Length: 245
Image (cartoon, rainbow, N blue to C red; front, side, top):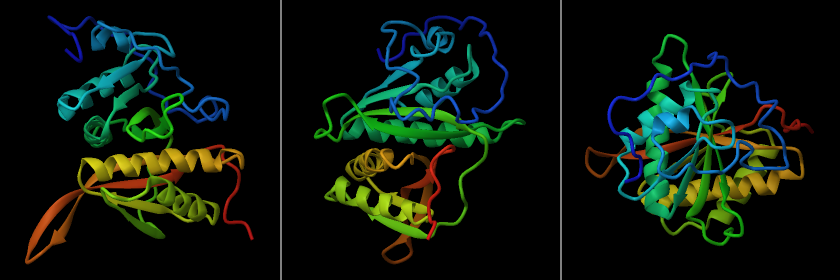
C-alpha cells in the first residue's frame, strides 16, 4: 500500500502555524532542501511527526488524489510544520500528485488561518532526461499568488518541456506573471517538467520559481466544457530582481 495507517492516528505535536518566510528554503544549493528521505512502511501520522528531511510522501498512478491531499494537509500541520516532498515517477503519478496538491491547497485556504500551498518541482538525481521522474517539494507561502496573468501558455501531451521552460524563464526575467494550462496526464507532466527546467535555467541568475495549481473550466465545442489544470508560475521570495530595464 502507498500509505499504511491502521487504526486511529496518534495525536500530532502541533507546530506554530506561521508561514515560511522563504529564508530557509531559498538556498540555491539544493532544489529539494527539506530532503528526500522516505520513511518506508510508516503511517502518514508518523511522517507528519518526522524531522526535517524525512517528511516525504510517495504517489503512484493509482493514488486517490483526495486521500493524498489529506495526507499533505496532515504533514503540513504536524510536527515541525514543514510541508512534504512528494515523489512521483511517470506522467500518471505526477498528474495524481498535482491534483492532490490542488485539492489540498483549496481546502487549506478555507481554514480560519489559511495556508498558501505552493510547489517547487525538480528532477530526481541523474534523471533530467526522464521528465516523469520528479520531486514535488510543497511549501507554505506568506501570501497567495497573483490573480491576473501577463502571459498565458498552453501545454499539450506533445509539447517539449524544455521549449516551454525557455518561454517561462524568459517572461519571468521580464517580470511577467506566467500562467500555464494543461489538460490530461501527459500535458500536466510536461507542464511540471517545464517549471522544473525553468528553475534550472534561472538558478545561476539568483531567481527561483514555484507553481500553484488549481482546477479551471474552459469551454470546448458547442457549449461543452472541460477541466484543465492552471499553473500559476510565481517568483519565489528572495529571488533577484526581474523586469529591470
